[in-house]
Length: 367
Image (cartoon, rainbow, N blue to C red; front, side, top):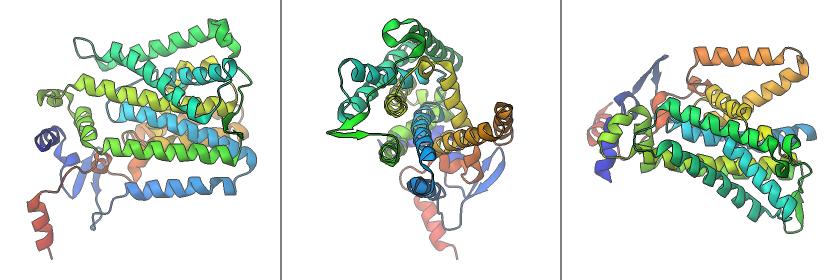
């Protein structure tokens, strides 16, 4: 394993995976603190504290809105795993999100199954299954798939699912499936408000920690090398397409979990949940916040949805134009997203394994 780890490190540029004190990015050098303190845990802690205090400070209708935003942040997390860490531009991520929503809605409508320990795993499995099927078709062919082929393939899958949902009477057609029964735990029903908010927040935190562990593991190191130099990773013996298929399936499972929560929170599902619009929306979340960081996807979803809510309330006629200009400015001047203001390129990938002995000795000998 140590040999394979060393091989993958060779595939990562030295300014990202090395031990240099200054990281050169396209926006100039980003310095680490003298004490070696990382910024990422601080950002994550601040975001968590703000999320925990939000229901205590917000009005009831804003708590409902914040719950929806956290679910969308979970959805954005699934896309960041796929794109930010494996370089797969999935323009059909809503396919897994919406199919899970429809699946749990059918369970609630036809089988009267609303128990949280049944519907959430079911939605996760639905998202995982669809991702495995689509990922197997797009990624596991005889020849490596190009970025354009995968992008258009996922986009086509999302569009086809949208048309199917609109034309299938069993799924409610254009109207979708309304009046979904509340999600339950024994005799308790999760209704809109603080209880649903903290449930979703707890799930987001657990999934986030699992994703953080994944991307900082040996598998995550291989993904980092894959993103930086796929050909060299393949040269070292890694099956790049298999790695992509695995992370694509994991992203589909997370999207399915988010879609299940969204269906029960909103109380209905409709064809747009599997369509191209939401698929594009989640791309904007990650672009705005910063890809390949996990926390950037969460921040991007919160800011984009929050700004959209405020603009639509104050500038009803032109708010989409204003939002589009803001997104364009961020993408033009901060291609790595808002998180790049505080997070360097080196910390996006992280540190793996022990530090070189020579580096330790030099630092100990320094005055």
